[in-house]
Amino acid sequence: MHRVWRKGPGLITRFDRHLVRRVSSLPSGGHDTFFRRLSASANHGKLWMGAAAVMAVFPGKPRRAALHGLIAQAVASAVTNIGFKTLLPRTRPLPEHLPVFRFVHPQPTSSSMPSGHSASAVAFAVGAGIIQPALGAALAPMAAGVAYSRVHTGAHWPSDVLFGSAIGAGAALITRKWWPVRPPFPPTTRSWTDAPELQYGAGLGIVVNTLGGSFTEQTAAALQEVFPKAHIETVKPDESLEEAILEIVGRPETVALGVWGGDGTVGTAAAAAVERSLPLLVLPGGTLNHFARDAGTGTLQDAVTAATRGEAARADVGIVTVERGLAGNPETAEHIMLNTASIGLYPNLVRRREQLQPALGKPLAGVVAMFRTFAAGTPTTLTVDGVKHKVWIAYVGRGRYYPRDHAPLLRPVLDDSVLDVRMITADERLARLRLLWSVLTGTVATSRITHLRETSEVRIEADGSPMVLAVDGEAVAGVRSVRIRVERQALTYYSPRT
Image 1 (cartoon, rainbow, N blue to C red):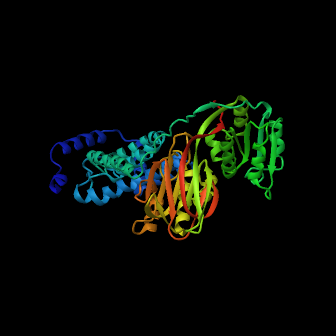
Image 2 (image 1 turned 180 degrees about the vertical axis):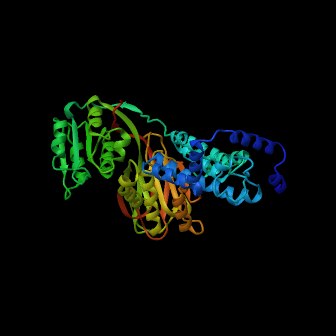
Image 3 (image 1 turned 90 degrees about the vertical axis):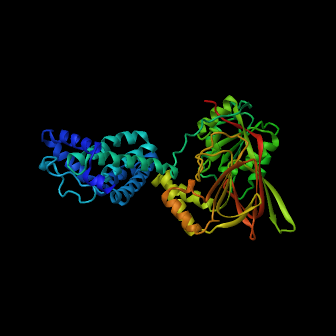
């Protein structure tokens, strides 16, 4: 093998020498300086690190593309320089093959086969293009220019460049095993139904929670202006939210229940709406408004449109049965779950992610939040459907959330009859190190510590000390066991059709 690459006999040599002669015959000019500088700019990956820095300024896909491009480049560089250059020693082109003024100075002394510059260039372009094809297309001419510059400047034979380019493309594609492309989110679908048309809010009772994240002194007056015929009850911090909701749904003229507040407030209102078979109008009054967003009433205008037209749909709800108190004499309580329930470090993770998101963008904020949360946190021992686990996070979503990894963000369908169960476990050896490594490399979704499944019912029991359960953002302490099941299309909610 070594002899073949040193002497280069056969078809490959003839191919290389033919192409080099063609390059040698090109007239001299400014392009010689251009390709020499382009080649030098890619030394040690500087060109691609600079491109990644520019891409990282833009949150979302450009930032993810930059990260994946750098990872693919690192893999390609390691395989090329540590592996193949040792296995395939080959002499680089000599001054007799190209005009001396074109040669790169100083000429590298490592093996000519394969081209590390070409491998890194193609790996970065393909890696970034897998995440965002438009960026890959924009980077392709630059990568091709770097690859060609290695022949133009006498640093490599053409076959070195082709082999290096193949290694770069292969490295980018292989990394998809650890960093798979997220499939597109499915379209939003609704199970439409009829609901009362609330012209000017006639028949609508609205509960306004002053603890809602977007509440101001003008909130109730603004809602009364939008719904002049509605009955609006403002609940102060020292008043009972449940009593206010029961008072409104008990009014004979109430044909629909409206709620202004966060997800916990919406959950309390949903329980009353399900019990009284009333349609629910969710107004975006909280900080995150998860259910309002999923229901299509993420803005007040959307909510008004749906209520006025009587446009509504049906949603499943989660029935959360909690056992608290002494083991021999438990107390049982039942809660309605519209969005999620979680145990462990998930609430801290979400809080940190939302704080960092305005400055860093959602993907990077999620990574930083996970690293901070898990670096200081401790796992919780739970028994999930009869199997004991040490978990960092046990998360149950009412409905199938997307993306299908560790960071659920969006729920296109509200009546799919499933519970989305996700766990990040600490059962494995070196659990914290494994977790932090997967966070740093962005491989939490494909790591063995992440477990995803769907079911219609799940039971979770505390091992020893009682646990804290968060249901739609509201904490329930002292929980010994919890059973969560799906109630099919139990809630009618207003949602605009267009």
